[in-house]
Length: 223
Image 1: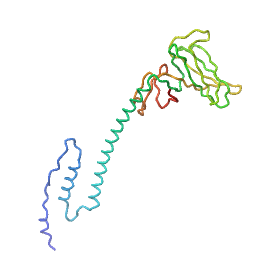
Image 2 (image 1 turned 90 degrees about the vertical axis):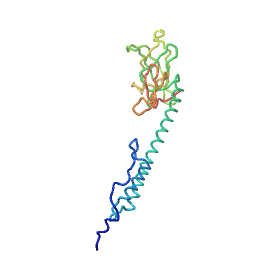
Image 3 (image 1 turned 90 degrees about the horizontal axis):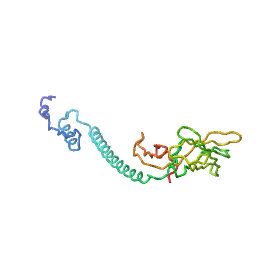
Image 4 (image 1 turned 30 degrees about the vertical axis):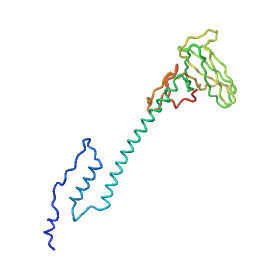
């Protein structure tokens, strides 16, 4: 069989030019033109399989869908940031209960907190020290039915002298049987300001007077 005339069926050329988007991104129109050019210049002896054609179409649709999904996520993220900003503004000057070994005393408002009491503990004691570590006062605390011991320091030392405003060290011990052991303290602190997205995972950080910055997720209570 003579195949000499088959070459006249198609002439190979560069085909129509595929426009390039200014931003170097392949849009839907450019993609369709590229597919038409590919069909026009395919080898008649080895035409593109339907599955290959459909696969390219599906791949483009997937990429396009991912781009639209990303835009939707970005818009949602911006909306959430705006909502977080409003919530953060409402927390300023409120009180947050956080784990801390320090507390801020403003010169008037008593320092309040909670002691995490282990099972079997019947009594607890809080020790207040100044910034240099000097003993200021020891305060007994009774264990409640909820397994916690609450305490309050009015700002006076053991001699009845009122202490100046500032940051003070707070520690606690509990009595279990005939032994005494250290316990963690939770301290109420005033929220002076709020920082958005400053931690590694983008979490809101609350800045507490006399305590410092604390991720919002670590606050046990806010009142």
